[in-house]
Image (cartoon, rainbow, N blue to C red; front, side, top):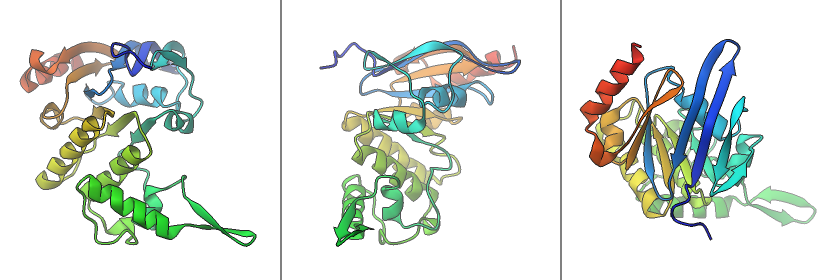
Length: 251
């Protein structure tokens, strides 16, 4: 059993260089159990690199990563996903020409055996994906519909719902409200809070501080590959965060 005061994820003194470019310079970062954290910073601050190190896409040059108090060494995003870390990137890793249900189960498809042959269990895929989306408050016309016909908000809902269903402990959302309408943005923010209700922690990466401020418990600020701030929500206003990032980005 995990103690409450043990972070869900802890990254210690993470260093990552690309040739002469220092992308991460000794970053300490953590996510508590059942916490929504805003990971903020200007372009090139190191946010995406830090997350790619966390999920095993990049190997850190030095530093340590812990999951629920145990040191981990993910060799690929699949390793991280199997451990309960579910990234939702800007491109959402959805296949436009596949159906909603196929995308929902992508890489985890249930099958049935008919004689010596194995087939996708499309009926089960449709049933489960529709049930999960309905449960989190998302209505789709048909789970057989291809993803290419969906709005940006609906695509985000599928990706988040997928993480919730497959037992994610941590969702990583990369710019989840970028280019969304006001209505769709509100729905995505509701889904973040829904994930938290289900005891799932969330890393919310964004340039829109006003969006993440509505749902986050804490904010970690990066600039030039270094952590420049770590604040609880009651310690800062959105304008304070903008001011800190603006000052650090010109140093």
